[in-house]
Image 1 (cartoon, rainbow, N blue to C red):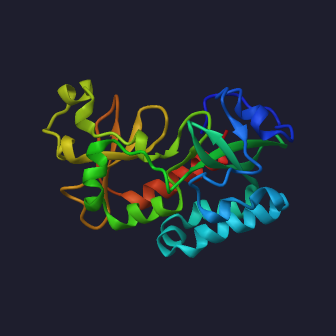
Image 2 (cartoon, rainbow, N blue to C red):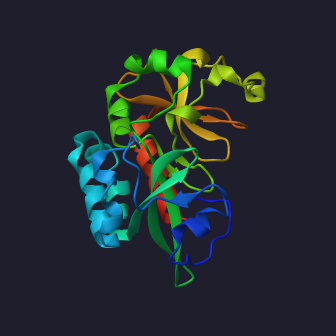
Length: 240
């Protein structure tokens, strides 16, 4: 779900992405000292369909990703058209080009798969990382976040993850009951780009429990982290 209009993309993906971040550039031949996964280096030498097959094979090789994001992965298998190495957000990342249809016309969306070798977390997240649920940490070995390029909707890179206690939430004053999670240990790993977040309380992650935290509505407690993450990510992948 994006918040900018899109036209059909030209063959130069970077030209489209520079509409949103002017410093974006394709990297067909990464330098030898680029700290990136080894399989990223040879993508440019392959045809787009082979790049997609290679990338999604890595998604499929991780049991947690294959199981917990099965609907999103199935959508990528059907609708992903290209995977390219770019430099954006001051780091190397992969951009997945995903097709969708609106009014009978095919258009394209762009999703960033962050570099798992260069996550750039804040100090407090680095310290807390060993206590983050294993299934979530496992996803971040594939990509440091996976999100819509213009809007940021999706699984957040570590540098964007925030504690709820870091912000002021006016909604708290309107609630009929005390907040049922610890704001200081509650981290927002998934965002819809418009004030909705999937939050995990590290002090209370039993059976994958998560909270849907909203800027202007009461929170929805006792949700399944991966069920919501997969549902939201599929929505972002399939809707303009």
